[in-house]
Amino acid sequence: MSRASFKVLGEPGLIKAEVNTHMNTVVMEDNELIPHEIQFDNPITGTVYGTMLNFKGELERLGDDVNNEPYFSPPIAPVLYIKPMNTFNCYGGSIPMPVGISKLEMGASLGIVIGKQAVFVDESTALSYVAGYTIVNDVRIPHDSLFRPAIHFQARDGFCPIGPWIIDRHVVDNPDNISIRIYINDKLQQENSTSNLVRSVSRLLADVTEFMTLNPGDLLLVGVPEDAPQAKVGDKIRIEIDGIGSLENVIVDESESKWRKPI
Amino acid sequence: MRRARVAYGGAIHEAIEWGNQLKLADGRVVKEEEIMWLTPIEPRTVFALGLNYADHAAELSFDAPSDPLVFLKGPNTLIGHQAYTRRPADVTYMHYECELAVIIGETARNVQKEDAYKYVKGYSVANDYAIRDYLENYYRPNLRVKNRDTCTPLGPWLVDVKDIADPMYLRITTHVNSELVQEGTTADMIFDIPSIIEYLSSFMTLSENDVILTGTPKGSVNTVVGDVVVTEIEGIGRLVNTIIGDEAFTNR
Image (cartoon, rainbow over the protein chains, first blue to last red):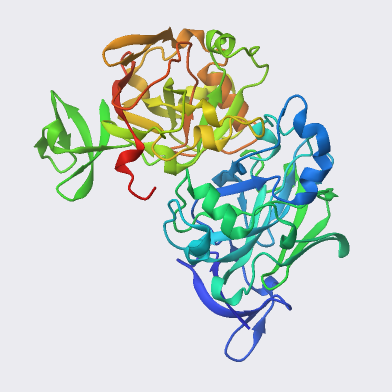
């Protein structure tokens, strides 16, 4: 059993409960609820910052390209971006496939939920600023260049499912050694581990807060492993992170999703 | 009408311009020296445009873009009028960017250009500081350049959309220590306000208090500790900011 907080549609504030991260169930007094019996809402209220190139394999894929045009040198500081509020999505929510696009990249990331204001924190105490951890599917339209990617690749409505819950920090022994798996239609498509991070969770928090304050409720993604699998309309995506749980979403045609143009 | 958000008497108030003073929503009339200016709205998503003036793009050796170059900013970077922006001791080139800020008034999705102003609540002035020493070529402009704490003053006022007859024909200036260093007009934007709203709302939902910083004309020069930087847009406001150094920040 792990202590977790989650948000239910229509309920104010976060609900605290014990969850079974292996079975992905919420343990109530006398029974266990499966996620489909709960209308999870996104548990995050703050700003969501994504991190690129924080898996060693991503940098290996770039190889010597980091020294060529347009990059000219390997990255020095964390490579960050923002997933704005319109992208927020929840457990079970549908991810809209844009018109004219046939595949989306599924970016599995461990999400660090900030618990107290973090300004220029030291690596040695960084984890004390963490409230807990969640699962994020950092969805994007496939694109090659990391130079100045257009905002429409990843800031689209519904492109950031988060959940189902936030696992209390104290339950997670070592955030830098957690397995991450993506299943598409129940078939394993990717497996990696936060042991392959360029910057550990603590190091990342230290380097980000050197110039950017993180506030309670903000979410910092540790990054997405190399070779993010692609998915199409109708696919069921499940991201499993050991000790955290599973996040499930389906991809639907944009015109059939709740994000469609108001009539 | 020009509206502000201010701190006074231990609380946050909405206020309006009242001669040389401000009138709080509760009716009290207060002097500017008595209040602390906050950002005129609590911003939701903050968009900023890069290279949206052809002369500035040329200044930075870029061709004008074919699609709007949009990046996002977090709430950590925003501060109000008459506040302080930090210049780290180790940098050589930190410059201001005076920009017209467009504040969205209601939910907008798939908006056509000709309807775009219906979704605008008003305007403000932003100073979108950049520290070019930290520029890296991944996800440009990277957040270490553009999303630092204290590096985006916004204010003083929210000016109602109906009070500005033509937002695409406003004079933009920046003065550093009273010397004119940047001058331009919003008429020179590559992507005008309706085009930007049409573009963004074509793939994402815009919401009330989303803010679009529309880019800056040429005239970027280095600023140093102690500089008083005044970014001003005709009819919108005069935003004052002072550069401070690392000394005040005792944590490092």
